[in-house]
Amino acid sequence: MRSLRYGINITLDGCVHHEAGIAPDEESMRYWADEMDRADALLYGRVTYEMMESAWRRPASGAWPDWMGESDIPFAESIDSTKKYVVSSTLGEVDWNAELVRGDGDLEQAVRRLKEEPGESLSVGGVQLPLALAELGLIDEYAFVVHPVIAGHGPTLFAGLRERVELELVDRQDFRSGAIALLYRPATA
Image (cartoon, rainbow, N blue to C red; front, side):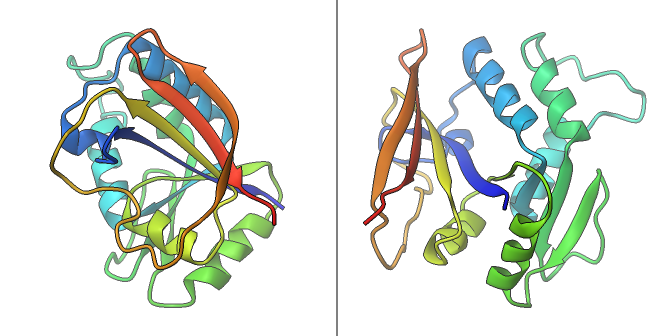
């Protein structure tokens, strides 16, 4: 069975990375490119899929936009080519190497089917979909890159989670910027 890993950048107060305005550096981009490369497929909700597509889809010209630095290219190439599953009840269709998973059906059953497919791992991103998956106990690993910033505003992770999820730290990586990559798994009883 494939594992499901949730990964995201956050601030010390739990704010989602892009809302806090933290620009990723070369080291964190390399970390996320490696994370992307280890996943057989990505699982996104509609909002995250559309956000990621607008930023990371290779333009029709084939040339990456001028705003991308050299350290962004490995991540961009990896996310662009990786298979994606999009959970949505409102989208009629998706492309960008993606397949639609209807969000109006049984989310737990749909994600369990994806986990049962051959392969090593799935990666989920975003805020709302991971909250639902955590509620269902479907996330096998949590990868957070915690940035040394207190945002003081913006959405926070797992807001509204009904029951606490006990985790155990299984790996950590310190970055020169002061950010820390932390990998957790649900604690066994």
